[in-house]
Image (cartoon, rainbow, N blue to C red; front, side, top):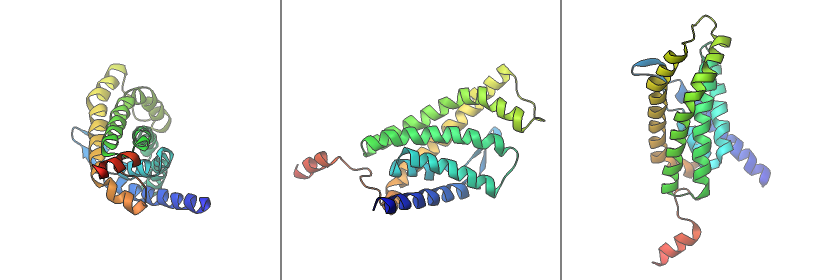
Length: 203
């Protein structure tokens, strides 16, 4: 039985990652900063994290980025994919950890909101310290912005972009999650804990 459950979980992770990779192909440039792309590929990872657990969600994030690189590889992705892994991984793990404690709508909203905020803020140091390193290694012909210029770009472009993308992802996930969770046959989504549910039914 345990082996069957593990196999089922692996299949679900693979399916969610495949959907995420396909969604990643449909990108829109972020207004005012065309090098940033908006897409809906984080939704399957967030659903996977909440329904199957934080590490399953992280696996979806990793696998969908690998699949995307196979579908449409370019040298820029050697920089973009690691940053995507950091941002999405943080959001998914935090949201899933909070939601898994008590699977209610309030906790879902709290988990997703916290994940989006922490992810957006974490990308400030990630873009300031890690991004230049990846650019020097994988894009040596592209000049790396200096300290003040880089900080300006992060605060006025990177931070708003991650906040907007996270907000869109969070809202859409919250709206469609229960329907997808039913397909995944995850238990307890957006429900009261057992004791509270019994009390509510008697009231």
